[in-house]
Image (cartoon, rainbow, N blue to C red; front, side):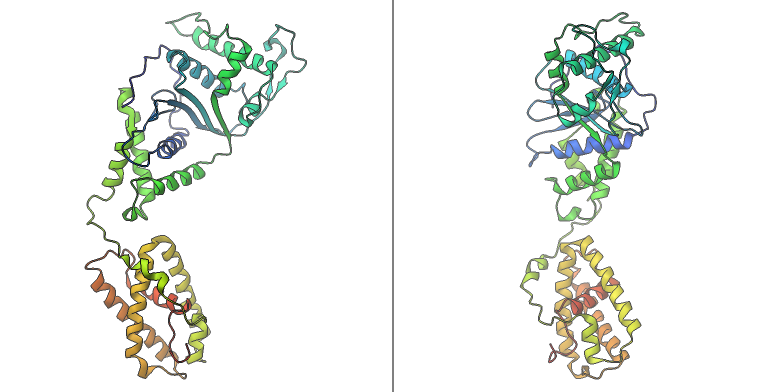
Length: 413
């Protein structure tokens, strides 16, 4: 558990509409937590929403990373209220933590970046006023370009004014002066560069995709969780949101142990899944007949209907999607079905020829499906096949013909 943090004697800056962009905030917090997850559970990582700023990440090395993350529909500049409010909040937190080197800041926002148009009256006067009231302060911070002394001076002036404005309306500290007012240009530049500025086209869908990828890379993820990634992410987002409503800041924290528990709970109520290891032998199978299903059917039944072949092709296309979705489980199914079909083709040798009718070809295919269903039914007593229904097996049989592993006439193969 991270060390307790000092109380922040600052004003409240909670947004009026807490629901706007909250999913974006939760997704980003999930990405931060999962991305810093250790390779084992020996080290602990903690994350909390609405703890200090939008999210706080407590790392195993003792660092605390605070981040503001929002999705905006309008462009942002350094003079935008959202940016100025965030910088003032970071300055308060920096002071509360005695300017600790272990404290880090970040801004992660989905928005376009605009330049700053500053009225001459609000520009700094010491050392001479800038010749232009147009700047690219936020653009340069996001791009990692070093700010000029003039840009830093303008930024400092804007933040000092924002700081005084916020505290002027606070009864507890009227007229509270910015503790950073005496900072040099170099010191304020160092503070701005301490913030990780990520402002750009960060769509929620892309952040969600990143979170799902990190779910799969988690040390707690194994084959039993395949296909459950979205459920795992939803459970994590729900926990982050639920904890964020706790009165005590400490109770808002979600840690490594909580994430591990989510991975365990998602499997609760299900029998222990045992993945058929047959997929490990798939690469040892040698495809011998390079023709596709259509060519093999027409070789033994030249009059076979083109419409029927199109229907079979659609079943094969669907089977490819099932293969992508179920991964190793489907490969194990394919190998078991291949062996069942090879055995059944021996039994059908007397019915196979170069002059089969449509009904005879269809009957042969159905015999192979029936034999495969029977084989998988027996194997299911030991192994888990989430995709071993009759239609999926039919697709696997057709795919084995299309992928060069089976043929109606072995002499042709």
